Each structure stands twice: as structure tokens, then as C-alpha cells.
Amino acid sequence: MSKFKKEILGSLKDYIMIVVGLAMYAFGYTAFILPEKVVIGGMPGVSALIYFKFGIPVAVSNFVLNLILLAIAWRIVGKTFVIRTIFGISALSVLLAIMQPLFTAPFVGQQAFMNVLLGGLLCGMGIGMVFVHNGSTGGTDIVAAMVSKSSNVTIGRTMLYVDVVIISSSYLLFHSIDKIVYGYVTLLVISTVCDYVINTNRQAVQFTIFSEKWAEIADAIISEAHRGCTLLHGTGWYTKHDVKMLLVMCRKIEAISIFRIIKSIDPHAFVTQANVNGVYGQGFDEEKMKQQFKKSRQSRQQEAGRENRPELKHNSKIEETADFSQRQI
Image 1 (spheres, one colour):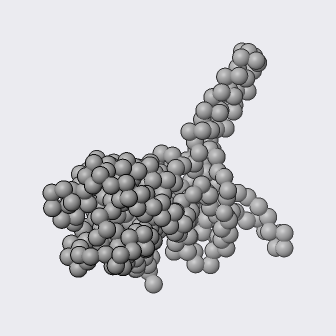
Image 2 (spheres, one colour; image 1 turned 90 degrees about the horizontal axis):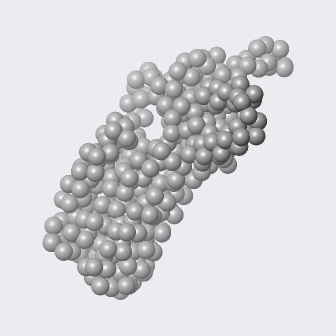
Image 3 (tube, one colour; image 1 turned 90 degrees about the vertical axis):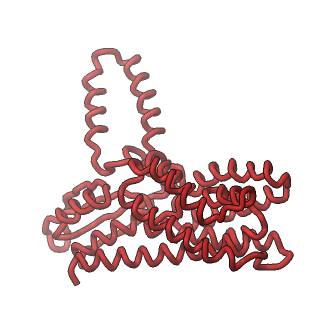
């Protein structure tokens, strides 16, 4: 099978799984949460407030608001994310328009807590499935994706911060503490399940790649996955032959894409994948490290004086030439 066909099949599989995740989300939201008049946050939450106040269908307001937000964020999140997000919000709006009229009453009668719990589980699993396959449901996901490009804050945590404000605003409409409490419960369930599914905590993944096509793999990872590679030279002790290895650091959410790139170029490549509890430096926890580096450099300058400036300049050069991580996420 050619590389082009593999890419088409991979993209097709991603879009199918995105639709499955969106269907799961739409079902959980319209069948369990919306009939209980619980606001969950994000654009569906804002759309729910508009629906309960003005009667505008959730699907319509969700689609319009997401397009506005996406127009603001398209330069930050990238072309691929924009395309899949437009697909995601369009498919979600269609699914919401189909499912909302089907569930005029709560799916589980007289069990409000059970409804919001089940709805939160389904929504969290749906969002997680969408993100694993590089898609988006829009709304808070767009904000979370923008934040994740420039910091190490998880997507679930970003959703938590933004959605708390939206849920709290529902008190102005319903004047009910119970609805807010149910909204918070649903929010926590969605965020926890979403983080569990897509594994967007601070853990990263380290790839060690042995392949005769190491140059092609390195170029593809840099150009397609936008991650840097470090070339290591070694010797196979059994054969006594020189070998070249690639060392790649990435976030867990990017591991699937990088693994696909490797296997598409060299199906017989020897690859090890290990979880890394902490990665510090360019492209990962850069902001905190920058502050620590600046403080350390200032203290050394004050203590050492001008005669040690060449050494500090050398350290700055080392920091500039670290090429194993090319961009922030």
C-alpha cells in the first residue's frame, strides 16, 4: 500500500472516530443533561443559556458562536486543527439538531444526579475520543488548544477554569443553587474523564528510533509533526557496527502521529517508547525554566563579575542550540 493511501486511510479513520465521539457527546448532552436544565459550560453551555432564555435551538447558537471563536483563533491553532474543528462543530450541530427533539424528558426519570453523572461520562469520553484523533468539539476546546500551544496546562484543566464561569452565570437565569451544583458535578466528571482518555497530563513520551532511514524519518517528524530530533551515534556491540539513533520528545497526544510517521517510512524500524514524568526546556515547561534561568544567570553575574562573562555566553549558546524540541504546545 502506498504512503498516500495510508495517509488517506489514516485520515478517514480519524474522521470516523471523531464522528463517533461527537455522537457520544451529543447523546449524553441531549438525553441526560439538557432535559434536566443543567448548564455544563463551553459553547453548549452558552447555547443552553440562550435556548432557555430566548428559545433558539442549541444547534444553531452553538454553530454560530463556534465559528466566531474559531475566526479569532485560527492563526494560533493551525490549519489542520481549524479544518477538523469546522468539521467537528458542523457535525456536532447536526447531531444536536437531530437528537434534541428526541429527548424532551430526562432519559432516567426522576433521577437528576444519575442523569448528570451518566451524561458527564458520555460527554467526557466523547471529547476525549475527538481529541485523541486530532479533532475538536469547538468552544472551550478551542480555548484549551490555544492555551496548550503556549503552556503545559492540561486541556481538562483549562476547560475547568473557563467552564466554572459559564456554569456560575446560570444562577442569573434559574436562581437555583441545585442547578449550579449539578453543573459543577458534570463539569468535574467531564474534565476528569477527558483527561483520562487523552492523557494530557504533564507526562511526555520519549521515542528512541533505530532505522536505516533515519534521515527521512527525522525530516518527516520535523516537517509533519513539528517536533525536533536529536541524532545519536552508537555502536552495536554484537555486530560491532556503527548505528545512528533518533531521540524524540513529544506530548502523549502527539505520540500516535509520530509513531504513524515512523512506520509509514520504515515498517521495520526498531522503536522504543517510554513515558517521561517531566520534560523541562524549550517546547515544554519553558516559561518556568526561563524564569529560573534568568534568576540564576543574574546571581552568577553579580557574584562572578565581568571576567566570567565568556562562560555565561557559552551557556547561553548551549541553550540556543538545544534542538530536540522545536516548538511550544
